[in-house]
Length: 288
Image (cartoon, rainbow, N blue to C red; front, top):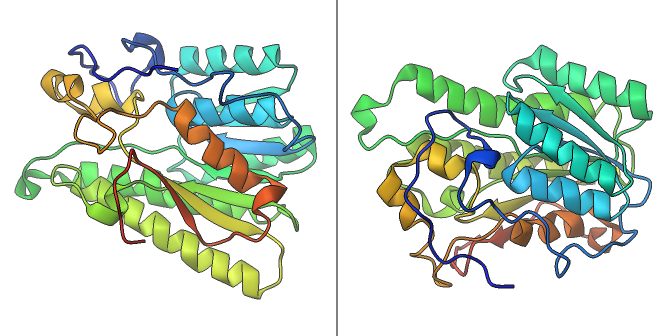
């Protein structure tokens, strides 16, 4: 399949952005990538930020492999409903839960509702995040710094801690990191910090659970530039138009191109893999 190599200038004034407003729409599903199967048959997956972008692609890919999906999302109601319709159309069950993962009570509610409706949790994908561009650290507001950390790091921790009350041997946690955790980004300093924290969290928790003989695996996926609502809601129009062109492959990735890594890590094919990060970044070489 041919993927877009550039994008028209555009900007959204709301963050983390709405997928239905993007031009062109991100590619979250493709038969060449998401062939129906049974790798995750009968499993229940919670995906934060599963309404759009990478989260939508993962939600659809998991449903294609037989999983039922719980999507925790912030306020992107149309995107969430559209994703639910897709999953319903695949014959899988999908539950939408709207709220803010930076709040511990909401994270506990997501877990409680999942257990009440499905009776178990097999997979937790900590994917939801925010990012805000700042070209001068002296001008980086405390409010932005707090929100970025509370959503990206606290949210990941709160969801994981609550899920650990119910995850059993064979279960897994997959965290969305980023290429910026390894190479940094001059205008996304606080966001890069949070993604570095998520990599450290992945490695630390995976070690603790492995040595504890829990049978629960923890891994991460570190995407590079991917065409998601983050992009037009984070950057100016000219930056959007050239987004991803500086990768070795020469273009931004599509959400569907990330989904396979999440499917693999959630499946029994990855039963001997924990504490690792898969880099889906268009050819950027990172030392990790």
